[in-house]
Amino acid sequence: MELIDGKATAATIKAEIKQEVDNIVAQGGKRPHLAAILVGHDGGSETYVKNKVLACEACGFESTLIRFEDDITEEELLACVAKLNNDDDVDGFIVQLPLPKHINEQRVIEAIDYRKDVDGFHPINVGRMAIGLPCFISATPLGILTLLQRYNIPTSGQKCVILGRSNIVGKPMAQLMMQKQYGDATVTVCHSRSKTLKEECQKADIVIAAIGKPNFVTADMVKEGATVIDVGTTRVPDATRKSGFRLNGDVKFDEVAPKCRYITPVPGGVGPMTICMLMLNTLAAGKKEFYK
Image 1 (tube, rainbow, N blue to C red):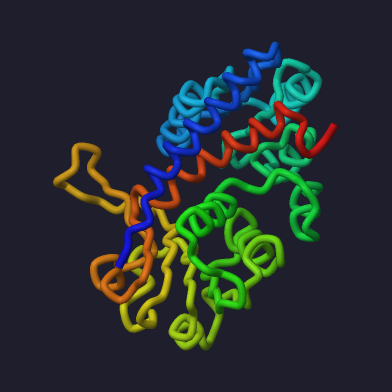
Image 2: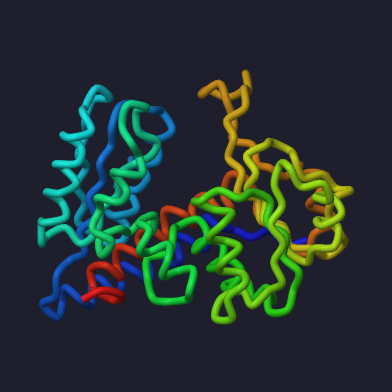
């Protein structure tokens, strides 16, 4: 069994990005600039945005954090989005989700200029990704693809089972793993209503678990020599931790790991790659790599 170290891989990629940014600036080019809008004081979102700011520093980017209280109106938030769309100094920006219930998330996502949509959530980016055109690919699926590539894990012709059908992970992951230039795999998507979920997993060379249920994937669901990618990050109570909780993956790691050829831990697997891929998308935005 080999552990897929997302933390170390992300550190390597951020160092590569910084080197490229240093070269761009040395040649008189513009330093990439990422902005983030944070609404309210959700603990998970606060941590995530803080880590994004630190990642910008590590990559040599400029970063701007725009904060609003959770009673902001939808119109005020849309006005801020429009301002960032028109700010030539900002190469890419994100609106941290989830948003308060009185705000229509989809309306906000669609208001973002797709050329600055480094989260890859705008319908234009999602559509271009689905048919294999250059675009911003959402960070978690891109991070998983990158881990598979960096660890030289074969995907072409392999049977890949994806657990979960969310717009952020499950659906884009399935699209990418199917495409010839990325996964080139035979893909099955399972979810909470799938009647043969266990049997499908048992046949899989690669299992990508993004179902949001702690310890859902057990040893009897995984064949010997499989690769298991755990996307789950559920906070579960833990009185031994200062925070009072720990992050738990969708995979029952201790019993599944001995059967695997490769497996990602939680934390330290897919999570660090997600923020790293946001940095990669911001670099591409700064270079106008996909959209002029």
